[in-house]
Image 1 (cartoon, helix red, strand yellow):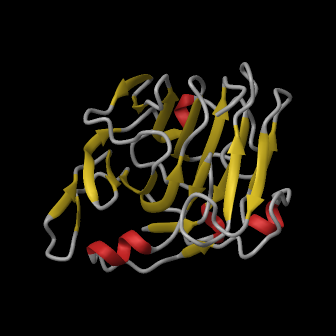
Image 2 (image 1 turned 180 degrees about the vertical axis):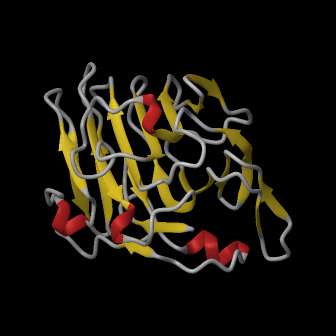
Length: 247
C-alpha cells in the first residue's frame, strides 16, 4: 500500500501523518513531505517541495511557499492561487519517491480553501506521467482513479464532487467550506479484493472503491472511482486549480 503524506496548500494544502496516528490504522508511512522553514513567498520547485512536477499556466496565479504556517498549524505551507479561464496551475507527486506503486494507497493532507466565489481546485490519484513529472494540462479521464473537485461559491460555500466514471456527482453532507482547516485522508482500492483496516478491523473498502475521511470522520464511504482500468496501479497524485482569478 502506498502512503504519501506531506504539507501542501491549495489555498492552503498541507499533508502530515496526524490522522493515521489518531485513528490507529497501524500503517507504515512510505513518505512524508515537509516544506521546512522557507521564507514567505519562496517559489516552489521540485527540489524545495519534493513534488515530481510544478506547473503554472498562462492564466495567472501560481504557487508560493509560506512560513510559518499561516492557515494550518505551525509548519510550512504551499499556497496555490488558481488561474483564470481554462489555464491550469498544478503540482504532482510520483509514488516512486515514496514507496512502490500499488493497486491500494493512502494519502493524507491538510487543506484550507479561501478567497473566491468561483473556480475549482481538484485532487487526483491515478496512473501516468501527466500526474507527476510532465504535469500536462491534458491528462485523460482514463488515467484517474480518484477525482475530488472543490467548487467555490458565494458566501464561502464549497461544493465537493466525486469523479464517478466520467461524471462529477456531489458528495452528500457538505464536508468542506471556505476559511476552515481540514485534515483529509483518501484510501483507495483498485484491487479485486476487499481492503480491511482500522484498529479493530472495523472498516472496509470494496474492490474498485475509495473512502474519504475528513477530520477523522468517514464522510465518503466506498465512493465510486473514475475511469482508470480495474487492477491498474496508482503511481501518482496531483492537485490543480482552474477557472478563477481570486481563489
